[in-house]
Length: 110
Image 1 (cartoon, rainbow, N blue to C red):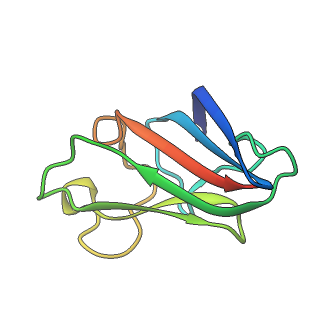
Image 2: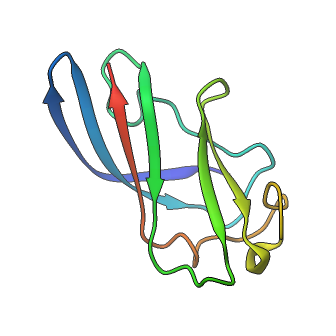
């Protein structure tokens, strides 16, 4: 139950960094989300002001929504009737690899 981080780019903007990272999800979503720290996203001080996950290829019926939980430092999946949850968090153990094949996470922070 882990994320694999791929190619990453990082740009300095004022006193902050913006990073973009390709992410591959495993085949079993964990309740509460996948652990993902700001340091893993390339923020040198490990402090994130914003984390945004984008992906392509999900049909309207899928309705999947990813949100970053900064307090617990986890990437969470919600909705997605086609992924096992019409509302609320995705069910533990659901395979989202096909739906999230083109996942990219952008982070801004220090």
